Length: 133
Length: 133
Image (tube, rainbow over all chains, first blue to last red; front, side, top):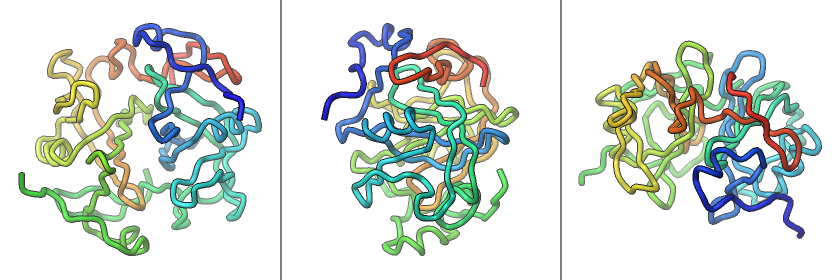
């Protein structure tokens, strides 16, 4: 497959300042994606994209991830109907993480909750359920 | 070093439902951390914690990460003064990601910007600077 993106720049300062999208995929060819509700700013989930998923998400405006467990592209909501329409995408300073703001239909979590982050850490060993962000 | 945390549960459903903190560290012993401004919900940065950093953050309430480049614990702001006081911590469904809401002093990004996500993706190849979330 032809490369969809230019490689990261060698100099960290240049990578921080460039106006070119030069995503830094990890050794497994993946980049971390934080997905945030565009209207409330609630963080919905953390997932991964490979080069193809990132290119497809930018092109279609429909959140498309790489499923590490199923080892395939995963158009969010293709099965559940809980789609994510992309409103905005950002990269971080060294371009090894994506922040994506979406209009979420239904719950983002596979447990049917709005967000995957439905449990608060309550000390070294305990969690408490506390769904709303 | 004694283990600070119990291991993940074998069953995914149990891991999704347990009220015990059972963080799932990756093969490198790290867990992904999303850091969000507690007052605005702006996502400030994405970073990593090892077991020790997570235990220390829970205990002290001061955001402490594992620096992958420097290969050492990194109390955020120890050098820059740009500390993060933890307000709330959450885990996601399978407990391989942490969401942390903080009171941020100064900028969170090493480029001195408020957030690391200061560039918007504007097509397949281009970015535009757009600091405010």
